[in-house]
Amino acid sequence: MAAGSVSIVEYFTEDEGYKCGYCKGASSNYSNGMWAHTMTVQDYQDLIDRGWRRSGMYVYKPVMNRTCCPQYAIRCHILDFKLAKSSKKVLKKMTRFLFKGEGAKGDGIEPMDSYNEDIGIGHQPATCTSEVNIDLEKPLKIVSLEEIPKSAEVLENPQTDSADDNRDPGQKHSSAEANDSTESCKSVPKPGRGADPNKPPCRKAKDVRRERKLKKLLQKQQQIEMADVSQHQETSCDSPNTLLLQHRAPQANQPKSLEEFISESLSPDAVHQLEVKLVPVSFDDPAFNESFNQSATLYSKYQMAVHHDSPDECSESEYTRFLCQSPLQAENPPDGPDSGYGSFHQQYWLDGKIIAVGVIDILPRCVSSVYLYYDPDYAFLSLGVYSAVREIAFTTELQKTVPDLCYYYMGFYIHSCPKMKYKGQYHPSYLLCPETYIWVPIEKCKTKLDQSKYSRLNEDPSAEDENSLQNLNKVLILYRNTVMPYNIYRKRQKRVNDEAAVQQYASLVGQTCAERMVLYRN
Image (cartoon, rainbow, N blue to C red; front, side, top):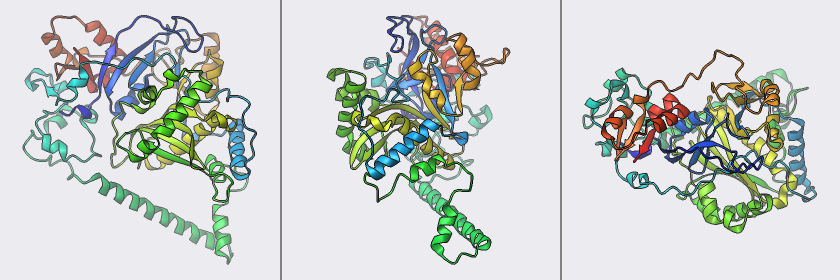
């Protein structure tokens, strides 16, 4: 079994509070955390839907009923997104600046500059030096199948190196196969006996992507031709240029869309040229490497000006650890977005210079905003708001290819912190119930949160967590470079009784992730 095909985490049991970055309490902030040595995008998607969030390689979950400033996960449904007046003003301000160079350069930092002030406040742990870093370099062994209950027969024996090497990069990995039924597991041929006859033959990922792009182009051309034919039938206009303008003109009495606001600001005739580039977070990527020094310098400038960090606190190594190291495995399935899934930097280039970088994760059901940093000299452009609506527009584009990818996650909403309440202005927004993990419209939550900082949010008193821990024995454990279910691990590890820690971990990540991810124990 290849270590890169599953999530490997190391859970920390802590009961001490630490300083809160919001109310400044000395030791009133509580959270649970784990070091993610590697993680699939599906596992992280499921974790953030249970209130987890990552800061670099560290993944944490606030103890909501205990911490001083409860942090509720918040997301926006982009298919029903409505631009607020304040967002329209920011878009118009950017358009004026790009076309005419208008804009009084800042007399201060944008008061609420980013969705992402929550990340990193008290959640930047020291570098993990666990033994699992060494173990990751070795192939993982699987405990004897005769010892594993049928319900845990989800991982294949690793003795198929050649098959793994020839696997289509877009093919689903074993982490996604963990939910297959017992019958489907039995139908998989044993290693060394040829390809699975029930699956289509493997194809190169680049061939699949080329075919998909060609299909999209053909569909788009057909739509344009059909629209043109319809337009010819409805009008008697002889000029093709007039026809084109009529075809692109917005319908009467229709409010201008976000896409129209953005497109009208991007013109080759503008005084300033703004370009947004999506770059994978990978030192193997040429574009990422070429822009690394400029990005790191911009990060340091932002942190010192906005957050008053010392030079040591925003050094190149800190920048790398915080925003250039991600546990997420890059995945490029045939039915995914052209960019693939994983961690990215969305760079805002103004006249050939980076003025802002939005760090995002592209996941199966959402784009998750991780952090934003920008040049304080351009704070007058409200780049925090501008980058947020650009990321919403980007999510909308991805949704056209991947229908399930229809949410924009904005990190945490903190009702008790005025600086963080502004996230609720993006409609429609939903908060995650900390007990049942159901998304609730924010309008239904505000009254409850006005009365109490911590609230269940779900209005159904009988509702429960549908993914709560049901069977501890099915939790997967990595012990001495061998993956095994917890009941086997408990028989082999007799020195330490860590059942309470394993149970706490499994309860927080939920039964599905507990059976699919691998918990490292030493």
